[in-house]
Length: 423
Ligand SMILES: C[S@@+](CC[C@H](N)C(=O)[O-])C[C@H]1O[C@@H](n2cnc3c(N)ncnc32)[C@H](O)[C@@H]1O
Ligand code: SF4
Image (cartoon, rainbow, N blue to C red; front, side, top):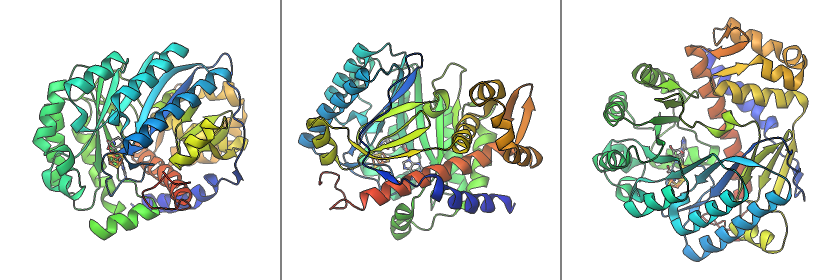
């Protein structure tokens, strides 16, 4: 259908304004609301070796740099206690958060000392699924572990430059089976629509997932910022969004109803699984280099350079790079995007927050989505239809590409390509 490429083009255009930051080097962060619960996102931007398709904020691991970084991270976290924040959920993402398990454990111990944390998610790579590291994570209170797999196909793993780092598809499968059941939720991260990926390869990946079976599977559509797209084209081929829908259909057909869609691209086997944090929490604080926060309608971005980040905290300053205050319409659009990414939006909740303005200002979007079959109504709740699920994959893919383009812009101002370690 013509509508999906049009939606992509429209979103690229809209996101350019939506995600443009004009207010650089702010000095302060808003205080926490005493009655609200926030999510704390902790970013660990180091990986032993970098993957060519990845557009997240990550740098090659060097131990002294990473140890200095973790110390700065803990200082930044302590600052949020003084600002009155109360965190009940924690998500540690990367990069590879488990590059230094002792530092990660010390950081999580600090967080649990400071706040009544109920759930901790952490990301890792298959080579860190070992008794030692898993034991440290369990003791540190991690209850959801997310393992980056991407595919179980050896040819694709080689094309992604992951085979030599994390082993063959069957080795990864064996490790996942070994640690299945250790955490409340074991999530497996996969990517679809990768250049060179075939439909037959995707079916084989789904066969392996079915046989595990994983508690939760997150199937990311390949998301390429402008620079990552050029990088991928050089070594792997052109990113083609036209086949994405076909792949997504197969994923949905195979995973549902054994799994339920907890977001448009995350599928869980039980109702109690911990899902994507942006859906469950209205507001979150990001700590670490290049992390984002969303509080009181304001997006804040931390500095991307690791040296700058550490130096700021060592000097008693906030490591902030930029901020953007959303207008009322932008806030409502952000909530619409995030809540429906979680497949449902309770109108009573948004009316409580925005009054009648929500329906008055978003009626065009809501009517259009309904007329085009993306949304249906269940009482007071708006629910994504199967068509809507795929549209939200496109919307979130474009949102993350927009964020990654901003990241690329900031990182291009650093002195050396893999750097972050330079000022
Ligand atoms: C940023 S990584 C961090 C955790 C770990 N280093 C890993 O590789 O899984 C988290 C997940 O993001 C997804 N990811 C990375 N680059 C991506 C891209 N360009 N498009 C879509 N998903 C991507 C992968 O599924 C990956 O597992
Ligand atoms: S995909 Fe994971 S391991 Fe690869 S560079 Fe990105 S963050 Fe690092």
